[in-house]
Length: 366
Ligand code: AGP
Image 1: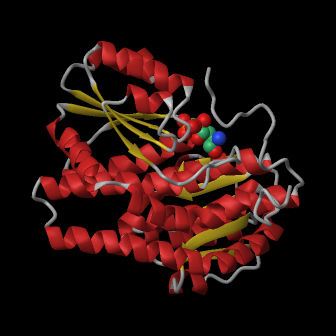
Image 2: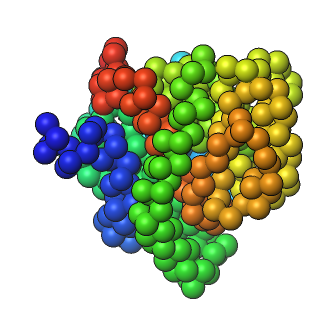
């Protein structure tokens, strides 16, 4: 009922609107001593694997940028469906397996963990359900603390997972002496500020998503393009478009765009762009946006508020959704919300069963 959904038409919409508050809850729920323990596990590991499925896997992909940039560690990030088949052979007692699962009950994640534990690995679990089997199988687990998520398309758990993984990397960076205490404190407080800015901007972002849907609704499918730390967001946006709107979309790495994908861009085709946070990559993206619009596609660009370069591109085939500017490592969080709203609004427009897409379940236990 509408009451259960807090006055929102769907759980998904309510959960997107809750996301900024879930971020604040994540920040206040994570205990320093567990964060420190997690950070030490990361630093002490001979090798680090990050395993998850779906949206949690996309969060894990972003985490690999966090670990590589803040700590100098390049983890192996893989679907939990692939891990027992191709990776577990190399796992040893010195390995750390970071397992991410909102539900904590995803079958592929759990069976990967049994295999990894047999080989002596240490497990760091990240889950929204502290009573889940993932939590019980972990040596250390961190609560996502986003609050219950009911819609099948994951939203607020994604943004809170990103934040939690960022905190782990930041903490590891501090433990390793690469980030000093005051920078650490300042980064944590900018995460809090970013959450507050998102809460304030949400209704406007939602309005822009509704406008953008007018361009997209007639399209047969399309791409979401980005690069760098926001590339996993392109994959995530494509997944949300499928689940919430039954709309076929593929995430494309911007540098790959001209190596094939561009060939399909024409009238009736959707092309979404997430403007990368790296300056040079952003510079390389504006002309792509322009050419996609010139090729006749329906283009939606998601960028930061006040992006003058984006505002200069004049085309009736282009809709812009802007999100509050955030520092590099928080950008994936700031970008997630407009992309989730785009998928949601398209699902509403196309009359899809948004909260309960066919064939899917909230936890894929087998
Ligand atoms: C997300 O929108 C999907 N419903 C799905 O990909 C999900 O993220 C995946 O099944 C993993 O779920 P988990 O986080 O509970 O393990």
